[in-house]
Image (tube, rainbow, N blue to C red; front, side):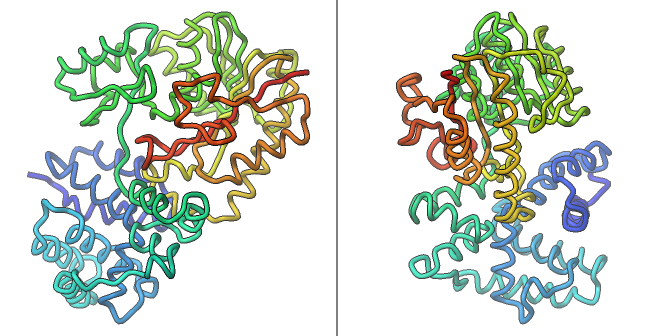
Length: 449
C-alpha cells in the first residue's frame, strides 16, 4: 500500500509549477525518490502531472462548459482540482469516472473545503454532458479550435496553421498532446545497434529500430533506463531520433577539430565522437558550467576521450577558442523548444510570441561570432528543436545576407536517404506527426572563401 496519495502528490507538483515555474520532471523525480509512493501509484502520479499539463487548455475548456465562473476566474486550488478530476474522468480509461469524481472531491474537502460541493457539481455535470461539449468551429475559427481541442497556446496553433494548413496542423496538434516516444542511441564505440537490441531483449526490454537514424532504438517501455546494466556499461545514451540526425549532417571525420558550441547536455557531442571513431579533438562549450559536468560524466561512461569542455558564451568572442580554426562547427542554438513541447508540456504555457524574436537575436549573434572560427571549406551546422520559421529559416537567411563567404548546402543530394525529411530549400525539418520524432531543424552552411 502507498503511504502517500498520488493524487495529492500530483496536486502539490502542479501547484509548484503554477507558482514557481518549476520543471515537472525534476519535481516528479524528487517525489518518487522519497519512496513514499509505490507500485502502480508511481505511474499514476507521473500520468496525472504530465497529462494535466499536456491537456490543460482542453480541461479548462471543458470546465468552462459546466461552471458559471470562467476557469481563469476560479481560485488556483479549485482550478487545479478540477483539472485533475476532469483529466481522470475524460482521459484515463483505467480510472472509473466514479473514482475520479470521488477521489477529487475527497481531496477538495482537504485542500479547498468551501469549494468541495462546487467541484463535485461541476465534475458530475461534465460527466453527464460529455457528449454535448462544444468546441470552436474549425472552419470559422481554426486556431481557436486547435487550441481548445488539443490544448496548445492559440498563438502557436495559428503559427502551425500558417505553416501547414488545417489538416496537417490538426495532425501535429494531436501528436503534440500525446506522450513522446522514448529513444536511445547505441554507443557504436562499444556495441552495434543489433547487438544492443539483442542485449536489451535478454533484459526484458521491448524495442524496435528507429526508421531514420542508423544507431537509434525506440524503447516500447522506458522505465528507469539509467538502472539498466547496459546503461552503466556505457552501451547507450538517451537521445531523440531527430537529434541523432544532426551530427550525421555535420559529417565529422577522424582527426577533425570540431566545435560543439552549445553542447549541453552532450548527446550530440558524444555522437560526434562516435562518428570520429574517438580520434581528433572536440571542444564542447556551454554557458552553464554545471551542465559541462554532465557532459564529462557522460563521456566517461561512454569511454570517449577526445572531448574538452569549456565555459563559453557562444554569442561573444572567447579566449578558449581564440587561436583555433575548426573543420566542423555545430551550433545547436538555444531556442524556444517548440518542437519538444510534448516532452516539457509545462513550458508551452510559459512561452510568448515575443520570445521567438528575442531568441532569434541571440541565435544570429552566435552564428556571427562563430563564423570566423571555421576554416575555409569547413562546415557549420545550425540546428534548433523549434518549429518556428523565425528561429530557423529567417535566422539562416539573415546570416547568409551578412556573410557572402558562406553558402547553404542542399541536404537532399548530399544525403539522399534523408531527402523525404527535407524542405524545398534543402533544409532538414522533422515533424512529430509525419516523422515520429521531435520537431527539429538543421541547415548545413559551408564556408567557401
